[in-house]
Image (tube, rainbow, N blue to C red; front, side, top):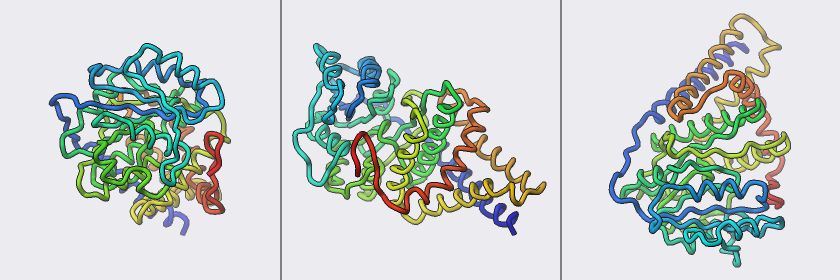
Length: 362
């Protein structure tokens, strides 16, 4: 009976990977007309250890000076973040720094900071990243090139520094999850996105009601994507483009990972039936792997090997296209990590939805 359950769940899991691969390979046409005016917004709270590399990368963006502004929203930092921002942007006209002076509607924390930034943004296209991220010099131009008049949202892929096994498993996890997001979205189904590498047309944001016009969510990025999708007015693109790659700082310890996964899990509870079905087959597959020592047989071993191979050949072409190197040791660590956190996630999320993030509790 165990082998049958494992086989059925793995079959559906594999079918999902095939579908997502089809979506990932779907072409996202670029618009090669004149570049639109853009605004890059970064919400930063207590980021004194990260903000300077982020600002240095933003300062190196290749984009016409008269068509780019960069707004750094200092979200009431209690460390030296504000001073570091002020000193860095002095004399740099494309940069602007603000502190949110008002609570917009029901918004809190980062979402309120972003809404304050969008409110004063002059750009036609809004790009967002985080203070612990390094954008490539071509990031802004690459993202902007995907916008034609009908496009309202363009998502991007984020990876992480991967110098150690602990970092590497997190980096692969990001690419794995965002490849699923890309594949699903390019087939017309929003399942996820990441706020440290995404963009949207300001008019689409306003048409959706802005952050204040949609229910508050700790995963404000996915909430906005769904709101724009529900308009049925704009095209949404999620390309795999190395020119738009963002590299973020990996989390330092398991406690940080716990709160990250809980935050994502709480946000994921807002998904629809398809989102839940994707999770269910993944859950049953990874639960079967963790239970396999108790029901071990040659057939179970073959199923585990098949699962590892399926994930590897799902991720490897993405790494190749993004011009990244897939470390096999990091991949095996990711597989163990993935199985455990997928199985534990409902037990973390369901008892309560309290989230601790950036020194605040939601």
